[in-house]
Amino acid sequence: MSDPIKVKMQLHAARPSIQGAAPPRPAAQAAVEAVEARWRAEDKKIKSERRKKGCVGCLAWLFLLLVAVGAAWYFLGEKYLPPEYTFPRVWEQIKNGWKPSASLPQNPQDDIVPVDPADGKTAAERAKIKAFVVQLEKLCASDLSKQIGSIGIKTDAWPIGQAMLNEIVSADNWYFKAREKLGEMEAQNEKTRKLRTEERSTKRGNYVNQYGSHEINRQRNEVDRKLESCKRIRVQAVERAIKAVKAASSQWTGPESRKDAAQLLKRLDNLATKFKDKK
Image: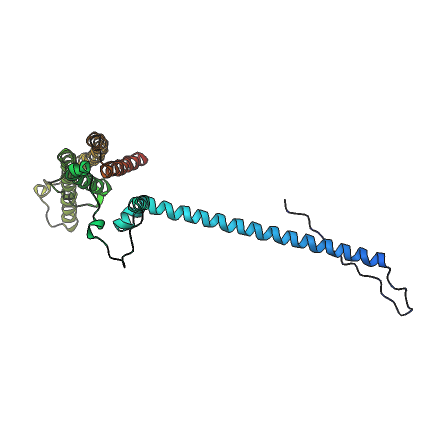
């Protein structure tokens, strides 16, 4: 509810008229001045409260903006920023103390970031698993209805994940073959229909290769089954990938290794969530 409207009244002291009124009394003059002083104090108080509310609102918006920028830096920095400006690297520098300015002479060895021995042992495996997750994301994001052939995959990926990728590509190829067969059948029937329309032949033997409607429908159902099989195999591959990455990363003890494991599992969880949303 808004504040009640206050009507400011201006009191004036009595002034002499033409007939010569009596001068104002000191008590009346003092009352007028007291009322005006009270109104000035109230106006000053109202303006002060408004300024205070405005400052609080600006600070609140500034805080929300800083929170949004910080969240974007934390979650998306590693994807768009150079490594030295990402949150983990900056936070590590803050904990270890800032390095001297570039204008000052520095020891070249100071720029070398020590690698944890545990991270060094798992570097090759982590690189292969990352490559596998990238290919799996690419396959899961593909629109099979608009593709002509299966997406090519690298064969030097993580061995456990390579088997999953091969199953997806194999299912895709069966789908493309079924869809290609359907296209050939429909094209053959269209060609036969045009021949009949143009009356190029009157012999029945010229239409032996025409497919019946039941054959076309059966092939269409086969295409739909192959497409559903492709989707099902993708869902199963993501579920198996999550279990496999958890099993492999359970042996990772280095800080970078644990960080990579968390990011990989998060990406796979996002894939699983997308499949659930499509159901």
